[in-house]
Amino acid sequence: MFTLYFSPGACSTASHITLEETGAAYEHKPILLANKEQLSEAYQKINPRMKVPALQLEDGSVITENTAILYYLGKKYPDAKLLPQDTLGEARCISFNAWLSNSVHPCFTHVARPERFTADEAGKDGVKTQGKASFWKALQEIDSHLAGKQFIHGSDYTCSDAYSLVFLGWGTRIELPVKELTNYQAMKDRALKRPAVRKVLEREDNVLLKS
Image 1 (cartoon, rainbow, N blue to C red):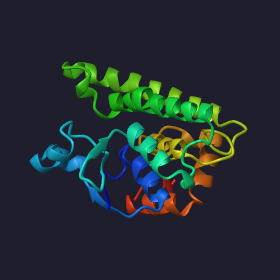
Image 2 (image 1 turned 180 degrees about the horizontal axis):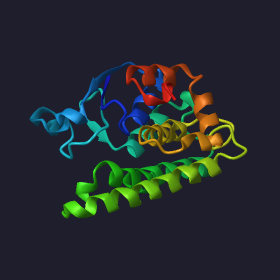
Image 3 (image 1 turned 30 degrees about the vertical axis):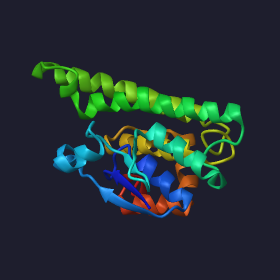
């Protein structure tokens, strides 16, 4: 049985949804970032980088980082169709997920954790302001990418949609005008019709269920 270490509302929601989509048996263990549980000695043995998500496999080995976990689950459970079925589509899925991880997520980190980017107390507001502007621009790019599509990669739902839901939720949380993102909102509404998506968002008490 798998064990997924996650924090409700964090980026680990992407791996949580994707694992639920596979239908595999797993234990879900919350690591509450707000309580700094990721810093505990016990969790450092799971992930020395002290971040979520972490997926512990049946043999005790561990995979970290959303991009790796999503790819692993997509390849291990091909019948779940969490990755595009052609090689080019799969490469584009990996590319999109890497962009979410490497570019979109850090924009939000500037908003939520400005102290990571400046030691100057007076400079934190500027970091947050610029981060919010960059994050909003990224959400608009996702919205534009979805124009004329049901989901991120076309008519079929994939792990990229689960990952994209994370950032729409964060935008909602910091009160960006996300209702303007009509394509993104429509994708979210379609995703919410999937039992796995709704089950995980309910488990995590996610803001997207209230927006």
